[in-house]
Image (cartoon, rainbow, N blue to C red; front, side):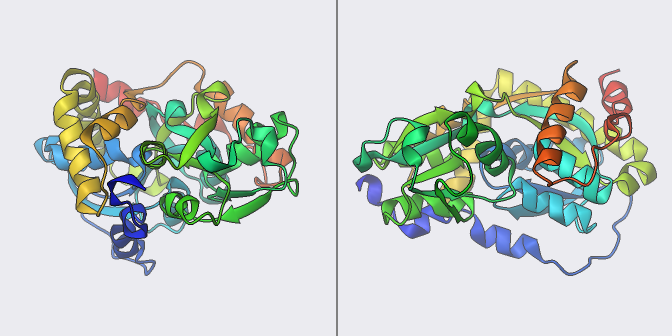
Length: 326
């Protein structure tokens, strides 16, 4: 395998995640201090950039950061009230709202282009339906995991049991592909780009063909109710981050690339830049947000992953972004 990719290379940020997972209860922090959760895959990297950009400090916001491999783990921390803010896709937001009354303060980014179903190159697999009887690495409970199981696989005629779901974190999957302990993976950037660049895997499905996958900044209701002005100032920083992604992508890429190289990845800057370009950062409230979340919740309810469909008028706290944009 090229570039000397090892298991260590593929366990990106698990050290950071282990430190951040600290599941013991933490004392309440002062106003204008946020406990920020984020995932160490590409979906969480705009948040990582936010924390390194200086924009929060400029708006008087202090923070503690909590890094984990996947957004559904951030959601679980928030349900347990160990983290105040965190990003994840619609399915995890619906589950968090159902289980913990979590709310959303903005749509932050579209990440449908960052998620793919990839098969080992040596197997010659070209279609999802060829995964019948195969071992598929999947982060169970994550938004990518749910969309694969509930939408992508069924469209290819595969139901649970037709393939063997191997549960693992997204940052373990490339190592599993290299070791040939799995045949395919439902994964996100930068892990897909790494597997592709090293000749390990080929793409057999793009999530963007099924779902444009908006990612929301969620919050605990207690935090937004106690700190409304801090939420507005926080979102002002996000608007500036969105501008950086558009006007200064090289600076953004340098900051985020350094995160992955510091965790032991051997990934070329070109490979990384292509992966990052699949993230579309644009803090907003798209007009189709409620209908999109309703569709995701109906799928989850049918799969008995929700007790009830949340009240989206209560979940979507649109007032804060409007004030930040004023």
